[in-house]
Image (tube, rainbow, N blue to C red):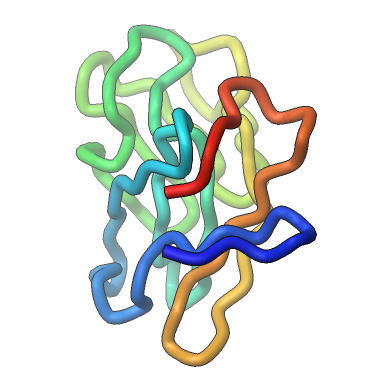
Length: 117
């Protein structure tokens, strides 16, 4: 997939993200969860901050993602914790959709950032 000079990485084709669902992608060493929350695309870290489970395998309800392991809930647009046992918010990433592709911006300060996908 492509990358632009300002840190935007082509993460996936829009058609691969199910309506009302989630999809795991990897950008460099980062595992990213893409979400279609009521038609809007968001991106967060894919790993739950509580117990290392993949959030893209969780239950998406509107803008809330529930971890499949211990049911911690997060607000997808902000990464804010909505329900324990998680106490730490998720990293969130800027997203843009253009010409049938989902682009995610990875900043130099993002932990775990590496080469392009």
